[in-house]
Length: 307
Image (cartoon, rainbow, N blue to C red; front, side):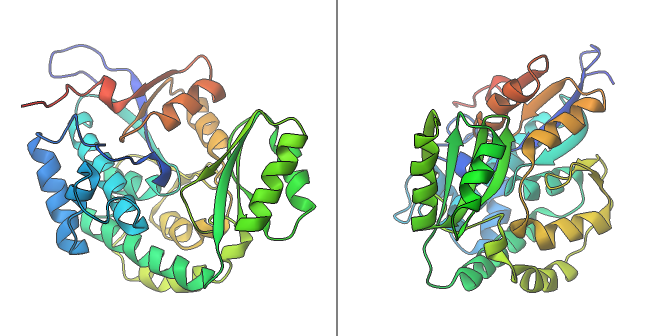
């Protein structure tokens, strides 16, 4: 594949970040781009809320509302995708948790509006399943996943939820159990632990039952065969339309196996990973998982729109 200027483009994978990648002002470099207004306008038509103002840090409720935060990250990722899709030779697409929706939009499998709608419906389902219990997710750095699994096995109400790299694992559960697990991890030699701004035990068996709720919404979606292969973040396999529906329905009860996902894409001959979104979380992880792969974030490739 050649660019508009005639040079040969390297085969690349687009990777889309999750919920924790958003921050106030995340659109600073692309706010003046016309596509940003278009994308957020379409999302806000579905949401009936000013997601754009929240992403810029102006709205009173800001990004503390989980639906607003998720839609803001989704919108930023979709905007960056439009700016990059014809500049790179994307051969594979993958999304980390929430990033799966942006991956589906980028692949042509699900429309922007349907992605926004399912994000909102899934959050309602999460809150319904969690009830009044306080959940929490936390990242543990410096221990191998097996060590973190052993800690979780000693406690009720906490599970490994994300395997991000050899020595970065996320746990998910009820708040007290997660904090106890973090303390035990530090005692066992973890370099650091960090609580994430996510108040539900996502990607764990504690969300059992949510599949029945979400599957009804997924059945109403128009899911097309992806134009670019989408690699599952759950089992590291390419997904067709049927597989997409399956992952949408059950992903919140399953571990995110991000390390395996990156390795599977790398084994397909892809050596260039581009994080299409407002952060560098995934691009940094790629450098740990596949040290000889090129890893870039969107802001390095999209000129800052300052006027």
